[in-house]
Image 1 (tube, one colour):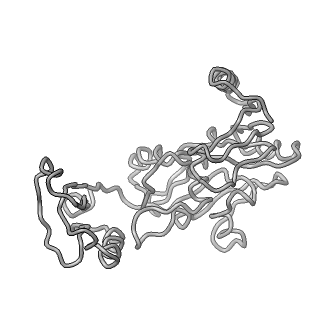
Image 2 (cartoon, rainbow, N blue to C red):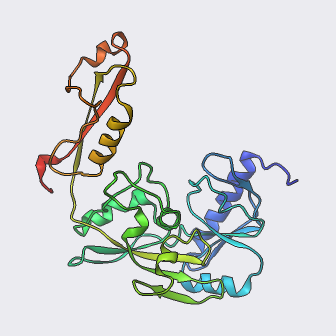
Image 3 (cartoon, rainbow, N blue to C red):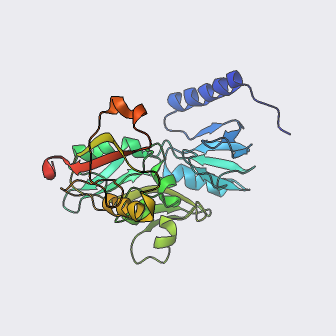
Length: 282
């Protein structure tokens, strides 16, 4: 059993690794063997080490010189046992940011280690916006697409379907540019980290827009929502547009109530309406 690492030792080791990376910007960062845990703490492993390349060339060199298991790791948000290994972890945090964009096609290329929550501002600056997002945005782009992370709405695909092109560094150190028509394209978009390490992705986007959310409380009879109401909700959320999207029980009128009166009017259903601001793209 591996010795327990104190929080102080963990932070000190992490700080040393970060200091090395900052003082050697052109060098790949290697950190000592520290425990890895996913976001929930349910998955734990003690990898041999971590490698954080600053370029695709460094990653290819690492593959050529290393042996044993290698697993790419993102934010650790997945509950599936994809990452745990006693080999090396590859961290893509240094391969991030907006790399290029196509204004006419509304496409943009990002480093695969970019966090979803960090993509909105640079996309807006070039007149683009993502088509859909999950409710948590701290995943890396590579991790979210490799695990087919979904967004909101029955009319939307998972994030992987918006990938138009990607670059993959294989375990042999080959650098492959993969797009539609390539035999690995669909597999690489949802690879689970099994084909190698994706280093960059080109996404299909849309023009910028704003969503307005209205929240209030309305009473319903217990159990009235039922299957029909639940299906209604999913269908509505998948049809984002100028009209209001309403969660309500089947056959019941919308009713506004005083939220302060909530405790005296149970049971209730908290409703949410979403609309494009002004009914148009802005």
